[in-house]
Length: 93
Image: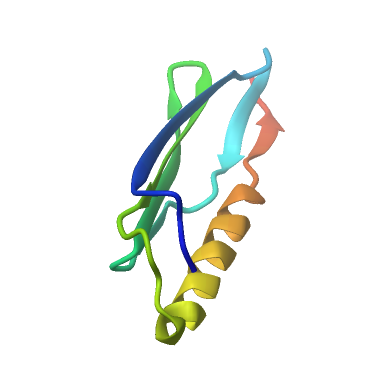
């Protein structure tokens, strides 16, 4: 597998919580590191906002054939993280 070159992407998404709702569940953080790349994410509450941050990094331009299983695992973990959900519930008074 050949990548165009090493790179690093940083993303931050901030979503205001709707009035009258609180967070019941958050997806777990994700941390995966291989010699060719890494991926880290977390979801947290900051004030009245749900904040999701992630870092995706390709460290090596070439991934040899013997690391293809690891590369597939790497992308499966990322795909699972991207499908994670937060659960909201109505706030009780």
